Image 1 (cartoon, rainbow, N blue to C red):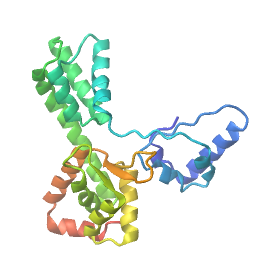
Image 2: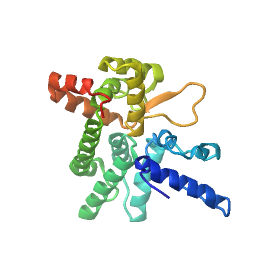
Image 3: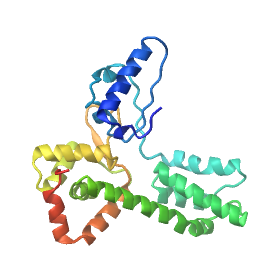
Length: 250
């Protein structure tokens, strides 16, 4: 099992995939690669194209359903004698946007509230008390992702596609809509396609697997897009123009 497989060095990945092919000829073998939604395109760069013909299962993991997010919050708390009341649970699920990592952050903050107060069920007031801790960690995560986009020369592209998604948690957009949004960056068709695939690789946008015949894209985290928009605006027009010129320079 290998996590963060989208960062796997091409040569190392090729050797790993080829070794797994040799092993499976001799004995039962399972290779699990966990990564951002751009993993298939990253693997396609490796000298081991057979992986795509093996009937390998692909599990698309983006945001959870509201029911799954609720269970992810409630079940660990119940195991330790705590729980959330309905109002608090609804507020936390909404604030987490059903993003698994944010669910974890909220669960930790709520557990600290339970440990400090002994209160159960945890109420909306407890949720309010836990909020500063959770939001501080969420904001730190936003900043890390913003710097990641900046380092990749993708801020202008990220800002361009954000309006397609940021207003609705379940918003979707097709390839043409993504391309039309990226045209505002001044990039040519080749660079627009490359930018879309890089945003996918980083999980900023993602395409759930198994879609036929049309393909739709979703936001990895809609609230991250709102953060990127705000931070980019603070950089001023000159900053924005500079980033547009270097959209795919990296």
